[in-house]
Length: 568
Image (tube, rainbow, N blue to C red; front, side, top):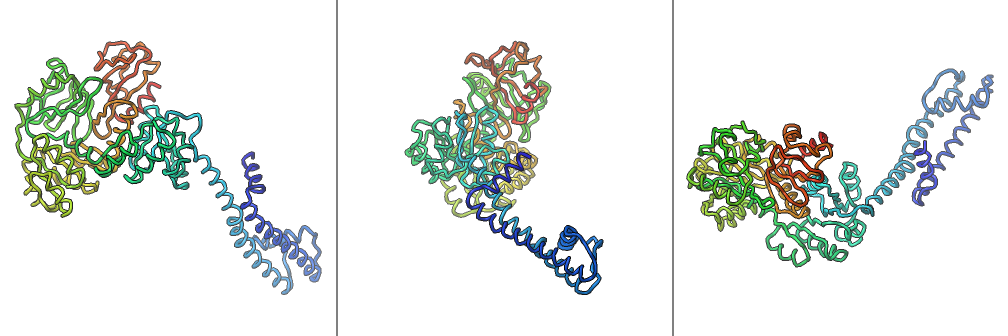
């Protein structure tokens, strides 16, 4: 009742425009009451003419039942003039009550009230609460934004997306996404968003808009870190001169990360990141003695001191169970010192000699970046591209360019797909990449297929199609920004897998990792424990966990949520 009363008070006393809309409706209601009164009086006149006597209220009752088409039939006229009058009252009621009244009510009362409420809700989106600080401002609602907000939330960092369209901002907030409504090139927007007390600004729009965003932010906060995306290589210098702290040419980085996971030439461990002085790397077991053996039988920790923290198999990261058998398509992920990784390479170098070129399908920015990175490692590259403009650009970074449709079997065979050790799918269309994954897997079952995706929703489909490694544009953007926010080196493990820093729950203080059974209960893999600024990698299972420690775990966002549900 309080809400109803508040709405009525707002309706009657609201802002000027609402009052102006309601007044015509009130005049209509007054006219309607006058018509009802007139029909009630005429009812009595005709009834007296027919010799019937009724009370004053009965006249009002009969008029309303006829006008609303209820027609109970308990009071009727016997003369033709009375019946004609009933028809007039009925038709008038159809027009006034069933047509005009709902239309005028919606137009003059309900719609303005909704608009007023919408304006009131929009006003609440104009600023970040003064109690919020150390937050991140995301300047565009692109494929990276939603995943970044979610990932920052898991890391305990609040993030807000700036959206200029007020109605869209309302829908975003209703969907649970923290949002600020305002123009990204207005100083007032960043003032209301609390940029002076924010941790970081992420400019993820076009290159020209990002330059404007950076200069606008610098008017209110000269020292705040600004991360900007760069679509064009030529824009990197411009964005840095505008005042960006970090510039991310994501498409180039995406190609380089895909190239870094290629298996070609002499077998070796690919370094995928560094972690508190240790090296994260992965290596293929294809054509090595490790194929067909379990992790326990490989005994890498006993012989080299390195530890397997996960195993890639058909695009999915499997937990490193001691009894997990490594198939020839598996790619273990290991952690160790640089010296230990070098020792592993000395063992692997004699295996899997495959001098055949790597095939890159797509000569766009990602494909050219991947080809350039591969050739820098001395790996020959064949690029397949059907667009003449892109083919001309790809010519400079390929050992051989094949112009044609990658869906044509003759084109792929001409590119050398039968003997290729790895195939990179770099087109910007996810459906095309899914199709080509199935096709390439059929033509070369032993090749390592690596592919990009634009939308994370297509990751599972492309994994089912047979991809061995998947990396999305948005995922790389999230990892890149998150590493800057957390002040650590960038580690890109792969789609759906990440490193999480988790404060040790109270219920686990004093317990050992074996007693906690985190892996069995959540699927997360504890790879390090941090206490008083010191990080101990691969802690012993019987080591007690101390209060104030943080666990560094490997897994998915869903497994991280499961950890919170299980341990609080």
